[in-house]
Length: 220
Image 1 (cartoon, rainbow, N blue to C red):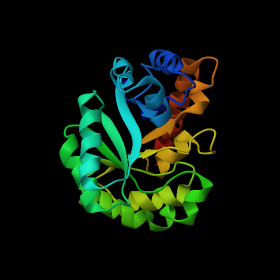
Image 2 (cartoon, rainbow, N blue to C red):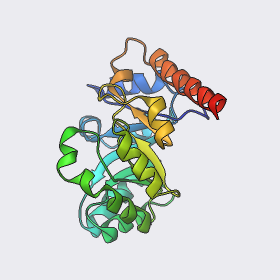
Image 3 (cartoon, rainbow, N blue to C red):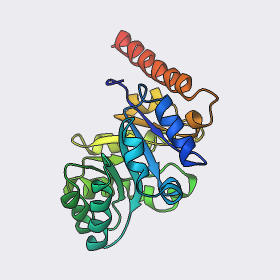
């Protein structure tokens, strides 16, 4: 679905389940997000396997010195990933190293997170992290879809970068609300992966997004 704003996070128990969900939602998803558990279970070759069904974003939240960041990013790019997620708190030089090593792969930097503990530190400096992300040349940032005030503030802080938002579904965020608040794409994982029919659930989310924007246009 070329116009979808949905990124499906393949938060599954096994590599075979991840492939099953990706195959089922290939027409519903803008991209698929995979993380460390899946990569550790399946190996880096899973990137190529999932890429058969759509764009793959590797959520590795890289947070190291520039040289190490570059080495990780190059390997992920060579494996066929479309995008990669890194932390911004390590500084402009570390994030810039990923950007320069990754082209044309898209780099998304974490500006704020969706879990309760993020309020203890990282979310307190979210605007600063967004500025670091922009200065480093990131394609986008990660901002929580279950924290409307934070998402709105980060959208105001940057007009150039794309915003992808987790925290939808199980963590309490609503896809349509997050998009209205400023996200460009929403990330949904367990709500889809744990559904008896992942395609039907993904289609339902896309329909709710479409309906919300139609309603917003009527009020405009």
